[in-house]
Image (tube, rainbow, N blue to C red):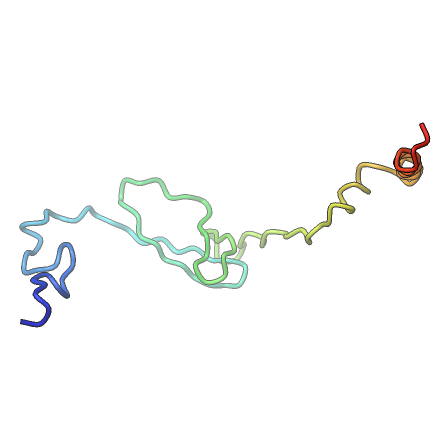
Length: 111
């Protein structure tokens, strides 16, 4: 006996049982989706399930649509912004100078 584990190498559902013991599989249909990189993805859906308009491409992660000629546009990714960039969006140069002078005065002990 090699280790004493009786279920080694087996998985749930493994064994000789077939369709008769598991029940019949639901009827399914495969639908093609294409991304902007022209990758085709063919997930299967139950016959009575609604088919989504978009599906994520498993190869590149772009959204994929059902029309091969008019694929969805890839998402626009914003570059990383620093804290200072966000502050500059909310403040103009004059406001920044006023806040800086106020902070410097406070640090120097001048009210």
